[in-house]
Every structure is written in C-alpha cells, then in structure tokens.
Length: 223
Image (cartoon, one colour):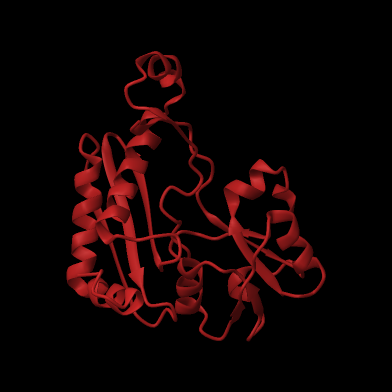
C-alpha cells in the first residue's frame, strides 16, 4: 500500500551544534583543530569558513560519539541540536552554530508520522499532531532535495521559515572541500511551498550547482 506523511510535529531546534573538550566556540578553535563529523554537508561548510581544520570521520550513536570526544580523539565534534536536546544532554553543547556557518540538513529537527494514504480513520485521528507552519517548511525543503536528487551524503542543505504567511528558504550546494559553494535565498507565499523549493534548487543548479553535483555523483545526475 502507498504511504504518506500524515503529520509533521512541531520542529525541534534545527541547528547544528559544536561540543568541544575545552569549551571553545567554532571560530576560536585552535589552528588545525581535530573535528569529528561524517556529514559531507557539515564538512563542506566548516571548511569554507575554516580551511585549516583537520576533519575526520565520526560514527556511532550519540553516546559513543561523545565518549570519543571525551577520550581525546577529537578537539570538538559537530552534531544536530535536536538529537542532543532530546537525549537531555543540552548542557554539553558548547555553541549553537548559526545558519550562516552551518545550514541544516533538509528536515533536520523534524519528526514526521507516516501512515497508509487511504487510511482515513488514522489520518483523522492524528491530524491534530500536525504543526502547519513546520509542515509547510518541510514540504519546501523536501521539494528542494527531490529536485537536486540529493541524499544524506551529499553536500547540500536547506532551511525554510515562515513569517506572516511568507516562506523564506535558504539553500546551498557545495564541493566537499568547501572551496566552491552556491548559496541563495528565495521567498514566496506559503500556500505553495514545493514551488519555492523547486525554484531555489533550479536556481542553484543553473549557477554552478549542477556541475558540482555532477562531479560528486559522477554520472550527470546534477544536470
């Protein structure tokens, strides 16, 4: 049976955070600091601001990642704020990275409820859980991702917000080393969020994002 996203609950903080052993914020980390993250989205953005950083893979659940930091394997690690907050470990956060430094992943911080698209009984029962503004933002971000044919291991990101019925969305496409980045904002009425996401994606593709993605995918997928 076909499935659908029946509800998007109120979004947790979508930002990335830095947790550092010595309590130093991102821009104050020492030259050549060893940073742990496996996200190409994060790597590309961090290197665009701090090309001196030494970034290496960080895997495992949240507890494992923090233990690796505490053991001295890294000077700092980058994680999603939402996961840390939901685990009740907010006191470990050194800094919430502003979106101009690290634009979130598509849908970061959002929880969706999925069900059979023709199950009207369930759809009716859970519709009260849907947060309308966050749902519209997620629709815009997912349309952006779909147009770029992106996945979780591609250096792209997007974040949408709504103010007074106007949806503003910022997105980027970058090379893994952060040396090339195409970034832009789009604004429109919130009644057609997918259109904003698609137009933003197509604008980035036309400005060089397509060539970047083609190099990453290796078979013309970014065209």
